[in-house]
Image (cartoon, rainbow, N blue to C red; front, side):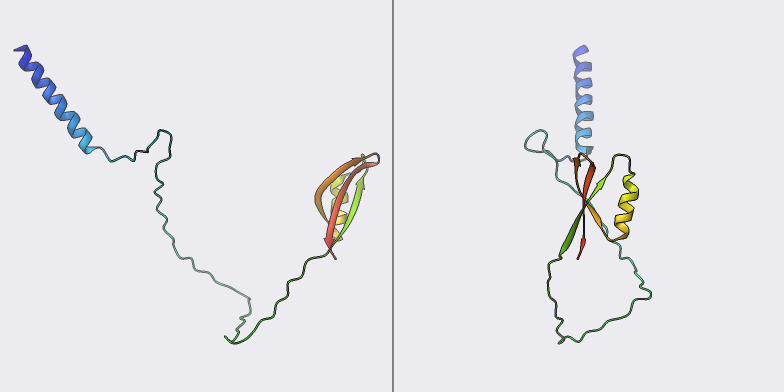
Length: 121
């Protein structure tokens, strides 16, 4: 009797486990542990409407030739020394108003910090 009840419980457990495995969603397995699974991404592009205002329309005939010439930009450089008591933001603002741009190169001197600036010629 105990053997019959044990077999029934075992059969019920096997049926329940088997149906759970069948109902489980499929999984992607990799060849080695730690490898990433395949990426599955759904991208839905939605067209956007764009309106241009105040832009003149330029039309070119298909046979027109547009001339272009590549020219290397020439630069001029300046070194600005900022004294230890001077405010750097004010010095940078003055140089920026004249078209100079700090290029991020700085080095210490005995008279303060020197910063390299450049601007187009």
